[in-house]
Image (tube, rainbow, N blue to C red; front, side):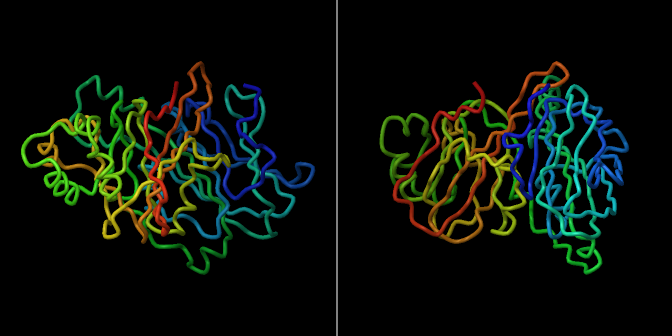
Length: 357
């Protein structure tokens, strides 16, 4: 590969990242820090235990922060922790940080962080793996292979002033299991539903008994009514894939979601109403709506929708894992939910969402 991995390689930012189709090519990679004219070069292992050799899709996230991300928060955002190492380093305005060597890539990857103030810093590198929620239950042998293919490894690199540790300014964990769901919901897509209110309203509108809501949505105005009243949000017809659904616990935590680390705009955005008293939404596969109200008896994952306001924004970001080691490129999609104060002028549902052609 001889093309830059970063879409804007000259852009300096506090967040930098790229993704590759095979983590194994990073197993021997070092984080190399040097001064002007490559003086005082130091080389730091990013994976001393060689956990990356067990190849998976991999995302590398490099963040310059005032204080480190809590380790429990990192587990919620990126998945189970596989490895952890921390170094103390001296950095200044002329410091250069890069990753090399990377198997199959003939140039180093420069971490285009903004200039550092002269001083002592902590450099924390953690490895994580996120696994679809379906793996929490019993799996058939063929499902095990699918789960392994869906897993994503993250190399999280965080640099922060050493005084943050000395002053004990490390933040407390705020992310919970209800702030990030990683799974696949089939080609039908999913709805985010205020299920108790939605169930009552459906009964009011079409009566009790068994219904196929997929047919009801396509034949009448039931879906429009539920959307207008803020009882559901839909991503209708999505490329079958595993994806993350994030909803940060508060405004400050939104900066910790690095899905937009390449500086890209969302691939597509949905705008919805949400009931003002609603604080959690259930994630229900669209195909399950054919069996209403039986599907209400199942236990669905929930996602928090923190904050106030009547508007729910759903942004889809898609990062591409570049082809390496003969493996084809792969998308890493993430839906990010944000609640807003203003009333939406128009509801814009996500329909026929193409993650990969």
